[in-house]
Image 1 (cartoon, one colour):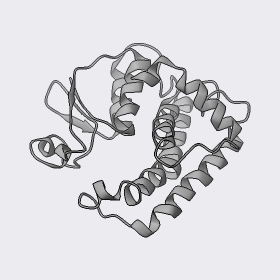
Image 2 (image 1 turned 180 degrees about the horizontal axis):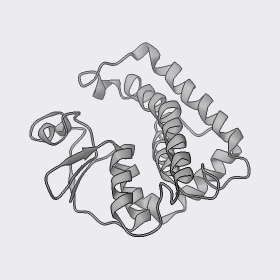
Image 3 (image 1 turned 30 degrees about the vertical axis):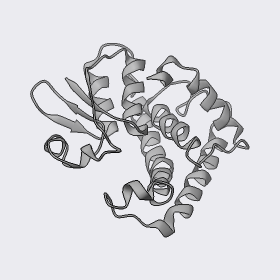
Image 4 (image 1 turned 135 degrees about the horizontal axis):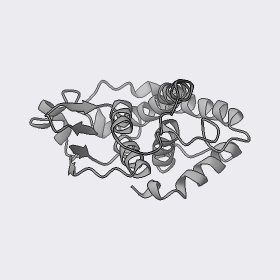
Length: 203
């Protein structure tokens, strides 16, 4: 297998997942700043023009972090980060989707349409006037999650899951991109510190 890797929070989700699961896959670096992901030959690998992408030994290419991580989780030995039973897997997928739709998407698009507009305006359809509202939406949903995290170690209670890795990769990245962690969200602040201390955070 081969992982097409780059800067940014999305590839970090997969790298952290691999580190937590003890998976080592050769990597090819894609120059996102230079737009390599939006040109051939990469577009033949992933027509969506996004990173990361996982090329399997038979030539099949998987994209989207959730699909990649779930595939790796299924083929690798060791404790699952999705869940060992149907209820655990359903809970992980529920929270991964909530994190993705309610926090990650508005946070990322708030950046693309605002601070990152110069890079993204010729690559995707941007809505600059929506940037501030999207950032605010992400923060409101983080505050909502903070209220549900009281007394919990991870998003799914005491289980580290894909939901944590997804949330951490984006919250940590955008904390340095004018979307700082709200220090009033004490449960999120404590959770972020725990995640930051994990060896996989350096992946």
